[in-house]
Length: 100
Image: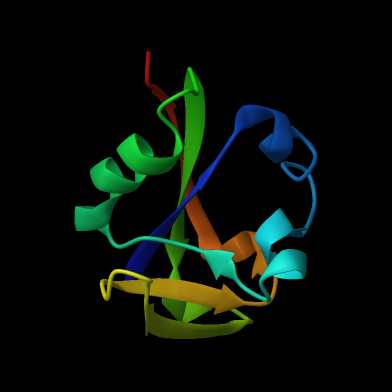
């Protein structure tokens, strides 16, 4: 299964050559926020409306070394959360998207 993580270019720059990726939310909330394909547009609109560019990481869940849990958000919608770092070989595509 594929899930997606949205990251700002300045943040991705720090991890693009590493063996793993970890979002700030891993430390602050204990997991990395991800989305299913059908949720991407709404997440981009809700949380990234002020950004000009983002990267969308396509994550193959079968290759993840960290635990994946599908959990309800505050509005009850189910989202995938990764409880640990994302190993680089699980990231199968990195797509640049211009928002503005």
